[in-house]
Length: 343
Image (cartoon, rainbow, N blue to C red; front, side, top):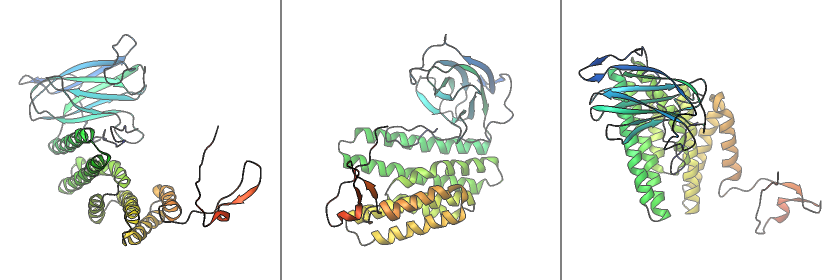
């Protein structure tokens, strides 16, 4: 359950899975900073309510970090959907995470300390009022994992700045421009993760980078930005991961479909060409990727039958008086279709 922020866009991104290994069971202090920590905790009704998730309880744990060092923080529970936040020594929230990845409700933050001092780690739950046991662990990240954490911080900072611009935008047109830049920046980041994975192919962090790409690429299909399409195409040409190839084809097809609709509205002659390429990519996904087959088939139906410029499929039904009718009976007339239910 990746959560959405201002634009309904996923920005609470999953963090690497290979970062947290061999976590120390006790704190080991050196040079005034903590090397690692493991805490067995429990959320109870006696804990204070969380300031971000108003109906959830929270506990605060402190951990001293060294400037420039990367750390991985894990919050694991079998009893509730965890949510993890990190505040710097000045009390500013610098990172948060809800889910490690699909079907994993634990939380993980990988963070490179921008200043030394005592950080506050807030353990809470995404389920309002949830209580139960949890395990919180902190340890220093490996060199490659630390570099990956830095990449993620750069990515999140860029998105946060764009988020501020979006909120400050005065018109819908301005908001749309910022939204496109958001998607384009995300696509650029994924290319950076791909380069990292290639440069660190023998390190477990490479797989983490590839997972990051796979888990975030789907959102890029929701924009008509040609810039996003360019980045998706570049990633598709470079990757050798079959499952990632399918996700990239699906996202690129959705992006091209939206580009086609936008071009059709502007009466751009490229609309048909864009739609044709999108349909070809979706057909490839249907044929080559069983896990994404149904999703691609649904998208293909929408693109061929329900997208702008396409003839609506036939509808046969009964009106409120029980009289049968067909949509084609009204060909040549202006028709409004209103789908509703009172269940």
